[in-house]
Length: 290
Image (cartoon, rainbow, N blue to C red; front, side, top):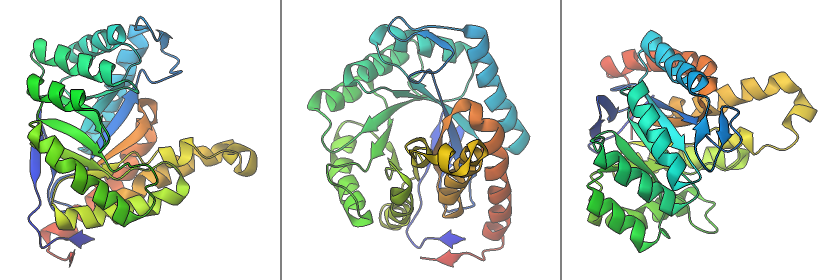
């Protein structure tokens, strides 16, 4: 287990603490809902969805969060402005957990954070995500809204190495801070299996350099793995999904976007196992200091 000479920041988002020295606070697990082709979504454009099934998934994640003591958040994925407002309204009524506003469209994300702030949820909302090439209107909208937290994604065209990921964050941080982001969460960008180890290395470098909470969307390593089922069998998908989500936690990740929220049944117990062990190492001050 690793520790850092550099001061490590701990942020409070909603009622959840995130960051600090590895083992100081449990990693936060973030499940995605309403994503493209999610079966509970009946119409992606209008935001029509099966409310009972959605609530079951939210409560299931909270149940495993309560059982394990691992904090949780919800990643709301939407494709239209109409849909994102409906999703946010539902999530805010269903849970007290903080939530991420996520979409391929900047307009949708902007509409989402504006709506969240209008209904009094500014302290719970996280913008997902910003990259160095994000347009100025995104930064302006965040500044106007007063949102304090955002996922800063270490993505840049041609980014492959861990050093390039660190450089992407170095370029992005001043822009985010100028927009009023005081609680940045650094995502080291996983897109496939080869990038997982590089993203994990970048986490170590970024915690050592900045001390901000770090993590990644580790599930991308499996979701983009073509031919996995054909080569290794259907059951392999589950074990691989658990493995890729644990790998960053072993190296001290502060948060994990673990994929579909329904996977909480597998991911929370696995992360709990590692987190429980490392908590005692932290208390005994037996860490390897970087």
